[in-house]
Image 1 (cartoon, rainbow, N blue to C red):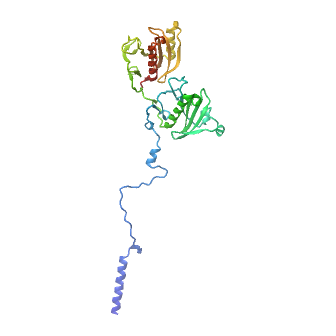
Image 2: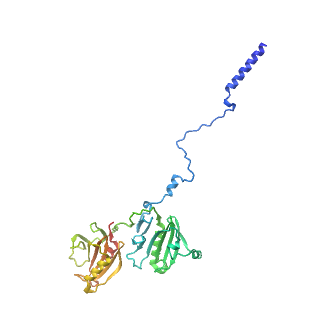
Length: 378
């Protein structure tokens, strides 16, 4: 009996030990894996949002993202319209009253070079045909064969040989509810070398074209403020009268002169008395509200006895100018007149007389250089 008692106590003790060593709930213990600490924390990407790097790539471009001008090109940035592109450096640019841009060589009337226009307009729920009256209808487009081109990341329609004063190519694209309409005139084989230049202009503009953020207060950037001087040429800048131009390095400048109504700058070789070389005089005076038409009429009245005539269609840095040829004076002279920022500019080239041989030929060379390089300071 005593033996059984000891057996019972031993069994009870064994049961107690087993219960005490078992985990709560009686489940079998498991081994937890050891998590190594890391220096990077993975953040779950919210649904519908791009990673930061991808979002940056899709952000709207700014003027700083526009292609830089290389040799032979100028950079155009029109942040008011939200566009930029490159164009050949022998073109000038003007903005018309409706905000469109026109690219031309020497004159808007020059038919011996291509011409391009760029127009940007809000769609505002309208169809393309309502914005561009001569744009083909959907039915006409269905029967036409036309090209498309990438224009700043948008697919643009290219319509060739559209009717007009000159055969032209239209490049039309939609971006952010705005329609871009580019026209290149005088393009095609029938225009010979001019047509080839138009093709080159088309390629340069479309391949460099970018859409950028709109800035309604931004100034138009179209080429450098003043032309760069190359070998044999010097850049002259007149900050008081607000212009700059290129001259052959043999010329001297005296800008200390003045007239009764304004300032005068003389350009000459060696001396103002040197009659064997051409001369240029640039006078600047207040326009006092007068227009180009007003000052042209005044010049006609001044030389009424000589029945002088003037020609129009000239442009200096995008500003219209009129020209009088062979005006009487100490020497026959050529005068180019324009009005800019309520200032009246007159450029007088001497001599404008073919009978003077080499001096006249040199005058023509000086004239071409000044007309091509004359720029207003911003």
